[in-house]
Length: 75
Image 1 (tube, rainbow, N blue to C red):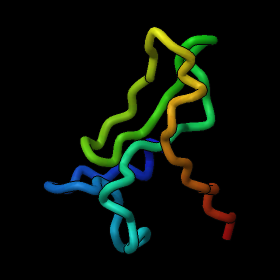
Image 2 (image 1 turned 60 degrees about the vertical axis):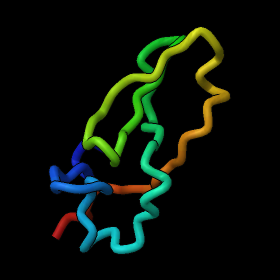
Image 3 (image 1 turned 90 degrees about the vertical axis):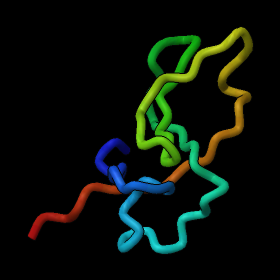
Image 4 (image 1 turned 45 degrees about the vertical axis):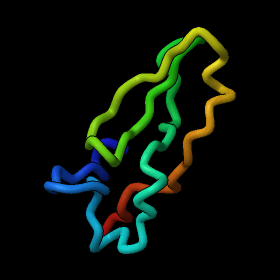
């Protein structure tokens, strides 16, 4: 997920050529990995950061979006 972040001067901080229709109101996306039992990684395409989410309540009920990505195929 981190490889999708682009340090553009404005949001969304993602390659808009590869993702031309990025919704500027939906900028928080879960990654596929948990940090531990109480937190998980997410990508913020508004700020261009990867961080972990934790709180006083069950983070699995927090509503972020998902983006389906895959590694490029071999030539």
